[in-house]
Amino acid sequence: MKNLKLCDTTIKNANGECGYSLSFREKIELAKMLDKLGVDVIEMGVPQSLRTDGLLIKSIAAAVENATVSVAIPIESEKDAEYIWECLKDAKNKRLQVSLPVSTVQMEYLYHKKSDGMIELVKEKVSLAKRFTDNVEFCAEDATRADFDFLLDVISAAKDSGATVFTLCDAAGEMLPEEFSSLVKNVKEKLGEVNIGVLVSDNLYMAQSCAVNAISAGADEIKVCAVKGNTAALEQVAFAVNAVSDKLSVKTGVKITELHRTAAKIERLCRTDRPKSSPFDNGVREEEDFTLSVHDEKSQIAAAASKLGYDLSGEDIDIVYEAFLSVADKKEQITAKELDVLIATSALQVPPTYKLEGYVINSGDIITSTSQIRLSKDEKTLEGFAAGDGPVDSSFLAIEQITGMHYELDDFQIRAVTEGREAMGESVVRLRSNGKLYSGRGICTNIVGSSIMAYINALNKIVYEEN
Image (tube, rainbow, N blue to C red; front, top):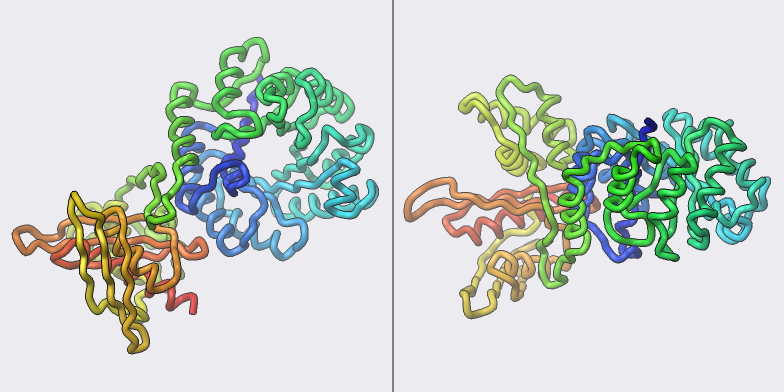
């Protein structure tokens, strides 16, 4: 029985055009959920911002245990392609994707090329990807509107240049299930033993039918999306294949018993928007759960920090490791949250650009919470006033008002560190700027005060490094 690969495009499509968008942290959480579910390939798409997307690729490469992480290389720049590979290369399983149009209208409109010119471009870009890895996919965009003989020629050229997977994309969405299966069957017959993938459109509301027909015609990979959209749905395709596995003589690695629950969780993650008036995300999050001991080496601590989402320099890793050893000598185990606090306390300590001068908080169960924050910068006093959903929310918004900048709030933790009437509260705030994670720590007898201090601590690290 053949193993059918399911390639999820949810992260690739999370750009707002498909009706949803995801934060940096949410994309990492989504990749973890898909990996645990048993999806074979997690697609990332073409990077739009090398720095931010490069860090995202690194983070997902470190977080994913079993699935193949697939990234489309930029067509315009060889140097950018090399950078993307450097970010991806540490993934346990990786793939590079070359995606180019093969229909006359798209070749001429998008790339101003005739048939011969496009074949040469395909050869060049597939050969470039092949320099880095043997797992190279060529996506024939708009394949259902291409001349069939030319489609065979361009796939053959990609094959000769080193591609191992060839995906037929139905961008127009005009083919009926029988027509699509016929296309797949004809390509398989003409080219022999090649791995054919398909990307179907749901313009005619028959994406699942097209996908199942393509499988019966010999397709080896199906591109799906965990969120309902304009392509085959992960949950429906996986259930259908499982139900008629014997008839199709194929099986998937998706955990069917967990499929519905995970799909609902992903749908909620993608469809829940952060209110524009709040710095907090409302998405689903799965906490990291691991422990470390004094016997763990520096490389293991660095890997754990990477798993938490940090991209630390060699100097910061040394500092965090020293802080880790001093704590680990006194207790048997260090949890993920405790390592987070150690990083916030020791890594990237910088001179403060913003200093907290004072704050006034008004909060209650019958009034809207408001915060008035006073900071100093370059010996100038700056004030911000904001209302929010709770005192911490309004305080962070007031700081954003002062700085004129909004950063993704990756995580926020509070806990008591001492007991009694004058108990000290500790807060850890994690902010993302251009994809990179910065954490700050604050301690105060007032938990709101400790939260404000932690936010400013993280903010100062961002300002110092970026300026």
